[in-house]
Length: 279
Image (cartoon, rainbow, N blue to C red; front, side, top):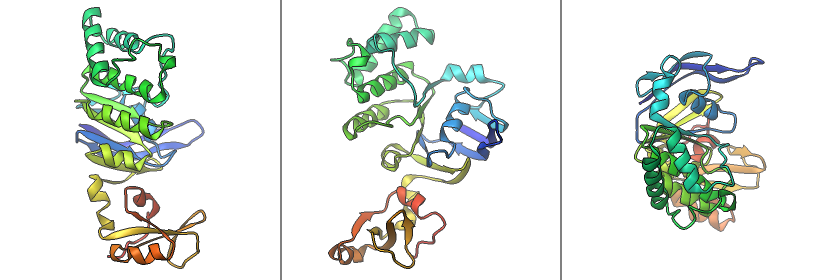
């Protein structure tokens, strides 16, 4: 279980990344979603003991992130967004080296690295220099590290940022194979919906909503999202696009008028913040 109690982080200059954030994450896969600058990466860095909080408290599996950081580090794997492989090393060499650094014997590290890379369908390329691999294969290699380490908790910060759609699907498949509890940050709403057992929405360092993906989008039950370039009264205006939510039974009416009609997703939680959705 991940618990934060009035957790705050204030950087030099007085800017707050987290403001008395209080959350509990106890499901198999928890996604922390929010716009850029919401505080997602700061939260992951504090939970993985890479950054000290300015106030409040946080625990991982019952251990305090400040006073018991050494106990947490034994039990977690953290893959930051900016993680980059050493290009001249093969995927096998890098996963093995990582496991040796965690205390595995050379034999155990080699066996576990092979097993994880094979499991993530990297068998054919595991002995090639990683600078020759695609972006998706590199991210899958990092997921293989988490899989092989058999940690209690795995932190993944924006695991698919910058990947093409096919590579993103490959990484999603790899994440699903991790047996550990997974905490991931993302600003891809489809990613959160596809992977998560629960979602925590944060904005400006504070928790706004929490629940399963279906619970969070339930307010749009029976609704579809309609988009148009025309300005309209009562619509939500995002740039040059006007957005409204209408009964699904009226979808064909708006399609015939040339409007774009989409099903409601987690993305609509952001779009409709502060707007009441009529039943």
